[in-house]
Image (cartoon, rainbow, N blue to C red; front, side, top):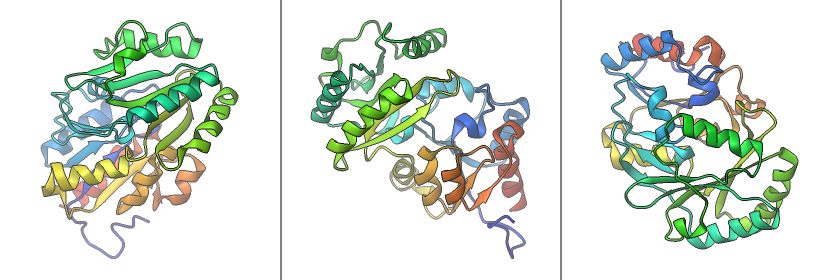
Amino acid sequence: ENPLRSGKESVPELLFVTDLDGTLLRNDATLSAFARTTLQQLLAEGLHFTVASARSVASIRPMLAGLDLRLPVIEFNGAFVTDLESGRHRAVCALEQEWVDQILQAGKAAGLTPCVSWFDGERDQLRIPVGANEGIDWYHRDRKSAGDPRLGDGWDRRSFAGGGVVCLTFIEREQVLAGLVSALEAWNAGRIELHLQENPYAPGWWWLTVRSRDACKSRALRHLRESICPELVGLPVVAFGDHDNDRELLLAADTGIAVANATAELRGVADQIIGSNEEDAVVRTIADLFRGGK
């Protein structure tokens, strides 16, 4: 049963927010022809829609090419709220530099060097410690083949010593990263947000992302509504996700929806479970709710 339509002939104007990988996108990280065409039509009809992803805007932009996405997107799991077309950040949530130093020190003790993403005040930057392992090299090849403008040569701690670091990403086998998670959790005290997840496009290699505790999708959505696009205040939010990093977003939404392929934890907190990402269930649900309210 659809909780937005129970006992109602129509639904109110809504704001739709969706995760990308495993949710809106299919397993090959693409938007299907059906999903793209349908979203184009819905946006032309006035749909309020944006995405909230762990990806960077440089990675999001080609996936959503051709969509007239007027609202800013939430990237890096909430570290940035960004205009998709221009790449201009409307909000930045960086790690404190002393925290970055502590995290790097913990990584060094574990024999790990992270990929570093930061904003230098003018442009986004990304440095990858090429050659550390095959999982890291996969990421470098992926970003290089995509022509990611953030990607620079070499890994030099002095490059980001001025601050602005939004995310540190350690890539290794799960067991190795589990030890680093334990070390960081012992120090954390609410400073940082840790997320450990297997790379679905390079099985066996796990990513541990470290961000500010304030850099989360739900807080970024609240900032988007209250400070950047106040016209959205008061609109009920419908949010979609598939993984544990979507948990707070679904809980903060008026209606949190998990796709069928979501983790057990996320399905457990969702108000509704729909079909899988391979079935374009998110776009079909958005179309049903949006057009059902007209």
